[in-house]
Image (tube, rainbow, N blue to C red):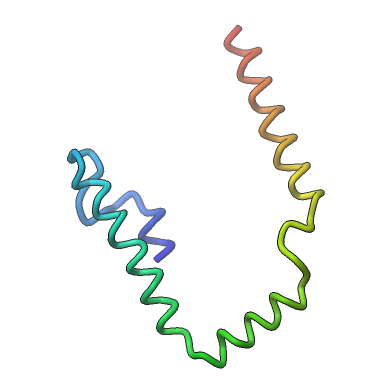
Length: 83
């Protein structure tokens, strides 16, 4: 499903008004739902236990700081290059 969502090849090309994006809005959520249904309950329960043991989401502030710094630096460099 991730490959379809990120692929430049679509069922209906995106340059077709409305229908180009409508297939993504319908197929991607349906595909995610199908993938979640195909995962055996034991595997999903084990994954949830491992996720709970790994810690709460958003506790890695250093990752956030690095990403924001890279975006700000890129923006400044582009702004200086254009100016």
